[in-house]
Image 1 (cartoon, rainbow, N blue to C red):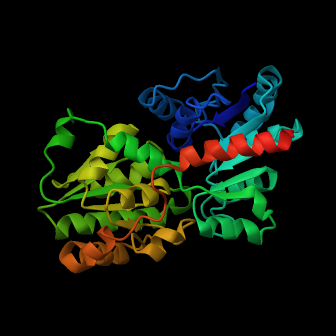
Image 2 (image 1 turned 120 degrees about the vertical axis):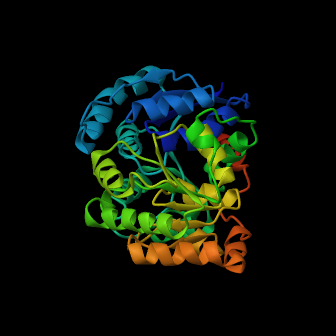
Length: 372
């Protein structure tokens, strides 16, 4: 009888990183994936599901206007238990550090269902940076039975927290699986704003809660100064819909001829823009892993990162939110070909595109052994 694995996720990043694992699991006769989405983020989640041709088996449809983290937590704890009783999974799989991940792991624990945690062991060791992700992933680690760590450093973090070594598996990150699958597909841009991009493309994403307020204004001021210093290059910024992002971005960056402020985009066009990019400036976690996979240097506009492997490898550099520092570090890469090559050619430490295969093999082996 096939091992029934229930995937529970609710946001775009979770969907991107679990999609290749779901698709890989479908190839295994001994494994039966069942997909339950919470829809913590509705529209962006649905875009990814369509891209990978995944149809959820259950949809909790929790997203509400102006929802709080507490609303999501309560919704998952209320609506997931009936799904578990109906599906009766042999294990539950969650990814990363969202409120959905923590809440689903907690519900599974209450019903004594084993939990597998994909992308386990990332840490900043700062409770509120990033918020709420750092606490979500720590709590999920306490609840999980199997920990699929992307890197050896993630494994070391878990060992220091008392997780048994035999329950930790270094697999690489499934985001590289997804990235390479999508980047390998042909794609043609139709939006005129994305077709004609003069000079070098500087791709920006920034939306972190911990930067809201003056740090975010500083970040935007840095981008404005870069636009002025490099008028022949293009800064392209898909702007998050959160008003805390929209207001300073529109105020500080609107009206600059070489700055393109566009709507948030789905994963496929974004990956193909990243392929074209010369440089990425971001506060995102995933892009710190994805851009190096395409040979694109990354400047991280945060004070800390739970992905220090990229910094150590030389593919990523932390620059904070200071306008002066952002301009200085970006200018170094734009003006110094040797400095640029050193980052662009550094080896990506986050995987080889086969993490999903490893995780499926581990699940099948571990579940069979536990049943004996």
